Image (cartoon, rainbow, N blue to C red; front, side, top):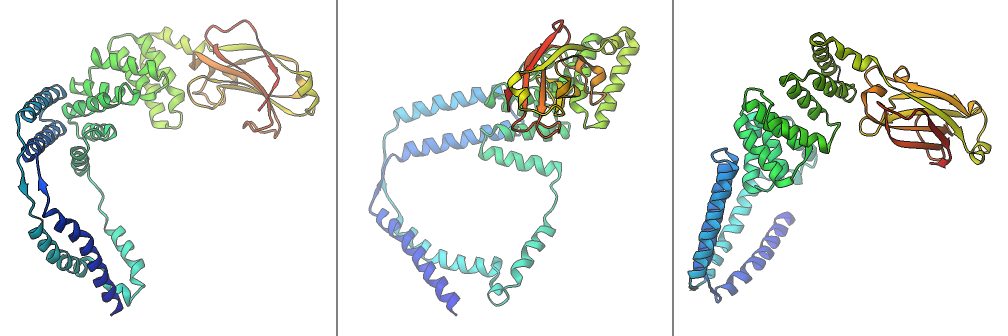
Length: 404
């Protein structure tokens, strides 16, 4: 019984909060009705245009033109309109609220509420489990519909447009996918992932042909992100279509170490590289020649005195832009320093992740305080950035003189 007393009290409080402003507003005057109506009509027309853009009925250029016409028309209407006023109808609205809120609240609670929990608290845990079990998996068609509904409510959602483009690509609706990716790119500006997705959609719209605008988009994306896997894949495909097999070979060779954790993709790219090498056997020598760096490694006297002779020293080269894993590494002891050595593809930790794969590398040496290869605070180290692995200096001197 106390439960229903509390419910009635809360309903009464809600009615007081809602009715006072309504009763007061019955005495107020509402002006500028014509202007408000014009604005509302313009909003509805804008929503219709955005819905047509989402559904692919119009493209971005048609949308921009229609929206400009709508803005011009609204401005003229507002300039020429005169304010009208009429009395508010707050009194009858107050009556509606007075009757509707209690009746609808109780009815909805009896239908959807779980009033049995008051006497059976154990039901609380059962409901979420039942709901979770009943949750359906969304199909691709349902996903597209859901994304479009969200975009109608928020047409400036660049991420939503990108997600719509990806879903439409899955449905092979390439024309609409192009519009979605273009809209996303217009909202964000040049972003590599969107540029590559747009290039892919344009190519699929043209039976897989990447030449022309798609390849230009890919090149623009690679200028922003030179090690973006999808960009290297598309650039290789475009070069292969132009019969520039050397360029395709370079792009796909650079791609290999970036997808090392995906054996299926590695196998596919290796197959494409092998196909290129069959067409032009001299391409195989581009990788087999390898790369090497001649190093002289030493440590400052101060840091050497603070380390034990048996401390582990790691000499390494890693990509300037790419995976964090070293491309080549040697393990020494502090007592070996100073030392002259060569880092090459033979020192690679993984066959698909080699020094010759990357043009720009970071070369460094580190005394590990823990004896482990992972860098930690307190390690002594030095690094040199932007070393050209294809045309390196005759000798690189590394003097360990910093503390991490």
